[in-house]
Image 1 (cartoon, rainbow, N blue to C red):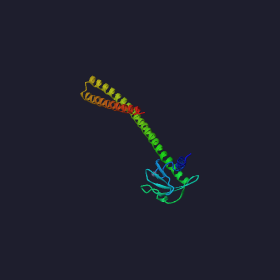
Image 2: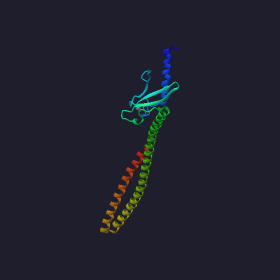
Image 3: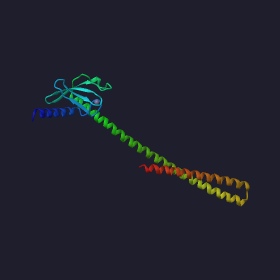
Image 4: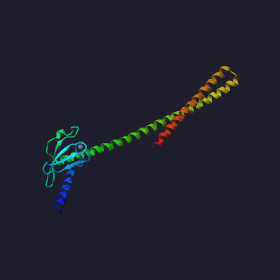
Length: 199
Ligand SMILES: [Zn+2]
C-alpha cells in the first residue's frame, strides 16, 4: 500500500466513522454533510443546507467529541455553541430528528386517510337515512294522491261543485308533493352513487 493509498484509506475510515455519529445534521435533519480533515486547521463538519459547523475531535479510535462552532443560518443551536460535546450525544440528536420527523409525517398522512374515510362513511350514512325518509314520504304522498282521486270520483258522482273543487285542489297538492319527493329522491340516489364510487 502506497503512502497516498494509505491516506485515502484512513480518510475514508474516519469519514465513515464521523458519519456514524452524524447520519444527518443534528440541527436540521439534512443528509448532505461536508467533512474536511486538516492537519493544521483541525477537522470540521459542515451541513450543506443550514451551514451549521462542528469542530471534530478525532482520536486514534475515531470521533470523540464535536464542538459546534457555527449555529444554523437561522441561529438555531446557539445554546450548544463552543462546548466539547460527546459524539454519542450528537448521534442521539440525529436519531431523534430522523425518527420524530419521519414518524410525524407518516402519522399525519395515516390520520388524514382515516379521517377522510370516516367522513365519507358518515356522508353515506346520512344520505342513506335521507333516502329512507324520502321513500316513506313518497309512500305517504302516494296514499294522499289515491285518496284525492277517490274523493274526486265521489264528488263527480255526487255532482257537488264545492266538493269537486276541494277534491281537485287536494289532487293537485298530492301530485305536487309526490313529484317533489321523487325529484329529491333522485338527487339523493345520485349523491349516494357518487359517494360509493369513491371507494
Ligand atoms: Zn443542517
